[in-house]
Image (cartoon, rainbow, N blue to C red; front, side):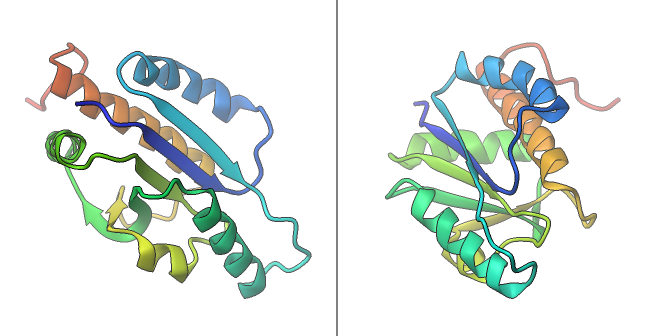
Length: 158
């Protein structure tokens, strides 16, 4: 059963080349499951912990209730594409509410969001800009859905 997927990120959101790159995957995902995106922007003069805490509060307020929160964090669990497909497929079958992926801003992700997450997912130990993390997330979510639907997209390594 397909559950709504939510992709939520903190930071600026102006229509730009990153959005253009995400569009292809966005359209493909939306043919398979309901998808909602939300950019959270906090207007703050602070560039430190105060802004990070304000972003955390805004993110928590923007999340659907209830939802399964997956925080993207370099210290999170790394999965292969096949493992992610299996995990997402099982979660969609077992969890009756939206599944929300959360990406932090250039300051990272507030501890309050990380602590409220049921899982942390990592794309590796590198620090990625949130725009790139969002693009990788879109692609991997589409890849997972395609694997689970039997769509020819994923090719296992030789």
